[in-house]
Amino acid sequence: MKRVGRIAGNAARTLALPVVMFVVLFILSKAFGTGQFGSLASLRSVAQQTMMAAAIALAMTCNMKNGRWDFSIGMMTVMSSIIGGAIGQALNIGAFGLLIGCVIVAVIASAVNGLLYVTMKVPTLVISIGAMLVYESVNMVFNKGGGARVSDFTWLIFGRSPYVFILGLAAGLVFYVLYTHTIFGYNVRSLSSNQALATSTGINEKRNVMGCYLLCGLMVGVAGTINLSTTGSVLADVKFNGAMSMMFEAFPPVFIGFYLSQYTNLTVGVFVGAFSMKLLTAGMLALGIPAALQNVGVGLFLLIFIAFTTNQEKLREMRHIRERIAKVSALVAQGDEPATQR
Image (cartoon, rainbow, N blue to C red; front, top):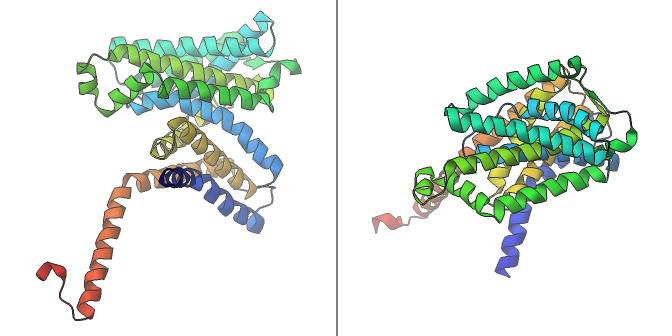
């Protein structure tokens, strides 16, 4: 019974954020909004958008677990859609050709990032920003800046139900197995908790870093496939391709996943975080909030969430102190001597 209660408690804590967010946004949208937030159609749309957001967040997870921030993720996703789409059409094997092309491009680009980090020993922040600018230039040069366009509707099955869920959940399953049940995942967790101790026990850090970047490329390739399959076209211009928003919108699910990993598996936590953030975006859209202010809303949520989770232990200690003060005050009021003076 204790085990069942613990599992139920962890499940409740894991799902608390999306449930509370849905209830609050549903009430606000009914009172002040004009959209159809909360309907089955809107929830299906949110769930479909979650697949791509979760794939990008999973791409960042292993590296961020070890303090490596990659700001080229969004541009890599767009580049995998543009160049991978061209490769997929050249293969002429349908939707799976697009998937193969996007994954190949993303894995190569991510491997380049990893090699630069391992060989140059430059902070990942510098490398990723430089790579982002290079990939942006590649997008503008490739196909004369025409981006990618797929006119055959049958090739775009990974952008609609149920195939988008199959692809997204399959990517999540691959990440779950690699992170949770392999030596690679064990080494990732060991290096993140104590790098010096882990390397002294024989863990090859450089090999693990490259593994993280290759896994990142795989997830980015999945995201690039969904990105291209959703609309059938991707623009090369950074002003319109959404690369920056893809990157910044992936940070909250990662942090949410890290926090929820104490109650559930990290992969599940990232998916819950991605779904929660897409709920927030859909709710703000239903309330008529402009796109620019939606980014502000996401940023504020991330700031509040990080502040709360970082200081949660301090808040818990303050609550215990207040409880002890209240007990002592009650004893004094009753004329009893506090236990500390006996």
